[in-house]
Image 1 (cartoon, helix red, strand yellow):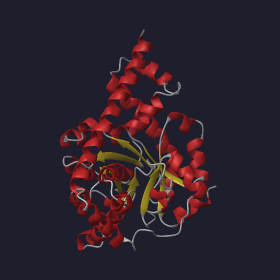
Image 2 (cartoon, helix red, strand yellow):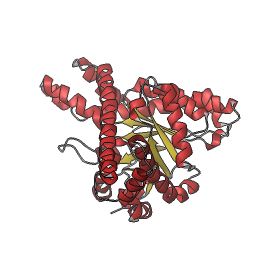
Image 3 (cartoon, helix red, strand yellow):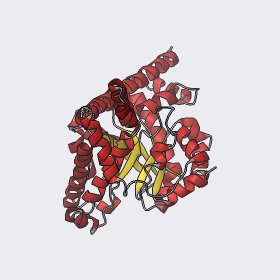
Image 4 (tube, one colour):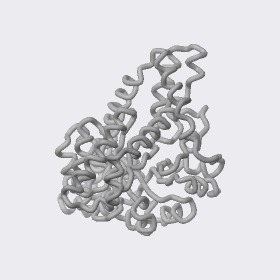
Length: 369
């Protein structure tokens, strides 16, 4: 069942689980996935935490202690989430050490309500890094316009970053520029840049969800033929941009001093349309030096029947560009699509965060009675 996952790793793809909850940690299941399914990292987000905290009583004792201490709901959420991430970091520490810091990473996101607040994002990134207090934590920062300087400033502090919520090629180039700027500033501040790591989370399936909806509205055969192709095409062109940026003299200067490339991370890789191959956002995006963060269901599908046949990205740039050009000719604006998706992404994470706060407040109130 795990040979496909091992082959994926052999092809240069790091498998990170897009899930984290306390039972996963305490039951030994996370360690089992590391041992048997080639899992070398974990990502999480407000939606995942909200789901975890609403199920079972794994958090009851800590909630009771937080209520007894008179913690606010924001303080309680901070304590609950950082506890899970800290414990997951401890489990993944041997992977982190064995990979020279590239893998064995656990991501935790700044409060998504700060997505358009550069200064407070940096402050919370530093606080999260300090409270988790583990060398293998990654701080997730949304790559909004305001998030780009926050990414640079956080890296300047020597803190490793997961730049997330990337949909467009232009924004991805902005993220890579923010990464290089952060390393250059860290170097000027006498930080050891060989200890700084980063990934850029490029979202895949949501591109198809939005574009397919617009293709259905057009309703022609030509439109139908393009369904389910934009997400992979967009990601492949992102990898082309990655290759370009990390072959420049600017990068070479940093690499000579021990810097590590910011790896592309394929996010949102669970297939939303049941008509599509359930492994497509994994097997069609195999490329060296990438990360694929998978929901459990997607990981199980790849383990069961994923066909890993080598690099599916670097030889397909022309085809990918043709897909996006064909969409523009049909009147589907790439710029509008990615703008809509970024705003929806921020809104979704904010709603999940509010749900998380609401759920924890209910539990705090219940215990306090």
